Length: 277
Ligand code: GLU
Image (cartoon, rainbow, N blue to C red; front, side, top):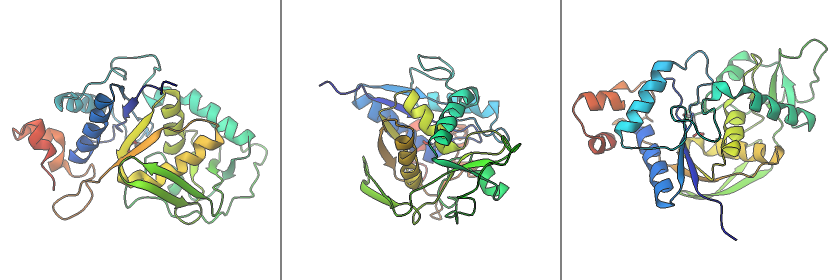
């Protein structure tokens, strides 16, 4: 039987400038798609209404092009699974939430607004959410509360989620120990990162997700979502994290290591990729 064609994706969030860490991960993603004779998709993860800015979309398109990366589907070129900007795909996420509600995989949660608001972004190293104590697990929706609560995924306690990572090999993360019930929908009617990511990767027929190693626990959460939504998960390949000279993971605050800053200093793309340890 012929295997499905390789489809990979670059999924930047336009909440700041891309830095060397993003660049290395995206180059690995592009190289894996090229080596497999596959297709590369660019997706604009712009759900964060407060932080996503059109100028950062322009900046990532320009920076990725400067790096020499090419995609055949994306927010700038369209494609068969358009739209490629998450802010334009809310009905798809809503339909997935409806399914999770109908099958009892999610419950309404009235806990800390702060945790729930943070769920819109992918939890990168050091900012992963604490294990949820289960306060609202048996909560029910009160009449008139629709649209005013968040929704959390019911992670089976003690379940070992296993997958073989393309780079790091066999992984095993245990529900309730390594990660807890996570937010899939915020009370301000926006999907959380995990739900949007799963819905889009499945809808766009992504066959392999390449992303930073700080998202390994996110992958375990997302595998539970694939199962709950009866979707086929892609393969996963986590890229080693890039640190600064002090051993700290690169974040968007590291403006000096942004691709723009390196380019302005006259570095070539190859030199920019080597600009962190
Ligand atoms: N937009 C997310 C980020 O930049 C994507 C994470 C992922 O690859 O799933 O963190």
